[in-house]
Image (cartoon, rainbow, N blue to C red; front, side, top):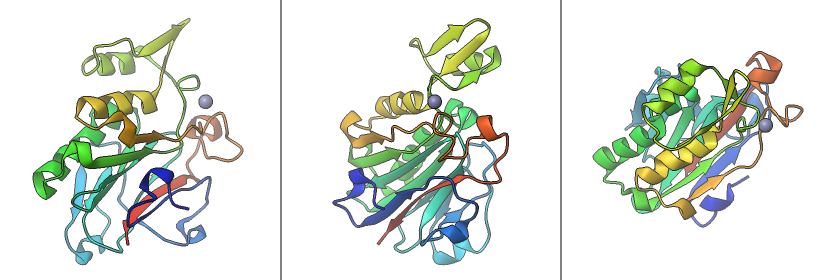
Length: 215
Ligand SMILES: [Zn+2]
């Protein structure tokens, strides 16, 4: 149940495989209305969870409020500041990644909760791998604005990118230590019998949930 990287800390965390609804989970996390934005929502008091905001990242330092993201190929990231007891859950597809939503979430944690990147542990969940995720030239052009190294593989007229790897590198640039980033090896497309893959199944009627909660 608990993700290895968080095991010595007072948090509960989870990466699900395919589910059809939140009722299949023991813990039902608060989830925003995700729209591939770079909007970050802070939960400062319990009443902030009465309505679901439009956001693709959630942050809180409140106990017993599980926060999560819904994905089906996109990258889920769970974060925990071990020093200040702050958690975050981030949904990062290509649009979110190109907008550096994970890095912006860390910046927000820094501004609001005095977090330091070197104290933040991050678990990157099951999502589509770099051999399965092909994108068009327009997407490559977007990423060229924020990445200076060689990040894609070209095959015929398609381009392949690894969103987990790109997120990891962006986080390292933002000061997160590599040893503090865990990357789940599963690809949702390669393992589409266990996971919902938007690219494979062509819908998100089922999905994965990733959540984290301070106990
Ligand atoms: Zn794959």
